[in-house]
Length: 300
Image 1 (cartoon, rainbow, N blue to C red):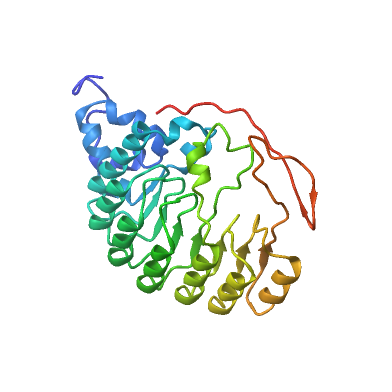
Image 2: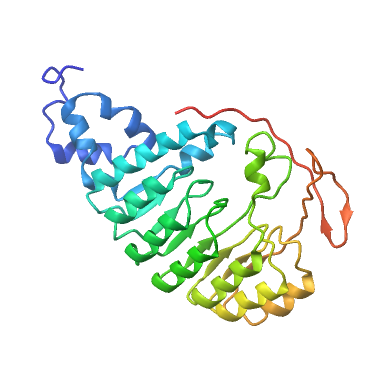
């Protein structure tokens, strides 16, 4: 489109912003940014970038090893850094996957008003960048660090100590079922954190205001569950799906002290590691299962 030859070219910036704000991130990133220079300038207006949410984008594609490649991580990092710059410090919500310490540290240094951070499936995010988040983004209310194996209990301690407004924590782990085989690198599956009780202790001691907690497939024992139920009295939702070291009796006796609890998801299933395929069988009081689906690569 020509700069001066379009009926849209003369629109006031505030009108363009109003129109563009109705687009999804996918539409904005692949459409108006490439129309003409004036539109690109409008697309970078801080008003449009208080929220950066790529979850719908990821949810529309099946898992693939392509998503775990350094090249894909660089693309996500580049997008995140650009949005941080365009927001001019006004970014309050980040929902991405497969980012790295570099981009997250960049965001922590420039977005002190961050309230929501969801970075699930980010293998190269470590305690280093999360420590920056803890110290510089103290208004954090929601944190999703599911499937981030390089993040340890130290991050949970630092976030708990420095972010008193935290209400939602998602620390789900991979379930080792066949649905991950072929889409997640085997070495990453094998490196799944094993210190469930240590993480549970950190949550119980430092996150007193939690209302929503997800720890699917954690290796915590009844000791860890007791720490959580004692230290997080405001819990309304507790997801223990896949926590196979807990019995129904363990769960019932501990959650009884949570006066505000509205829903608890019990383990229900147990997924063993058995070569390449999880075999279906009965195991005590949990049901074992096998799950498969087709995998296609995501392209950006």
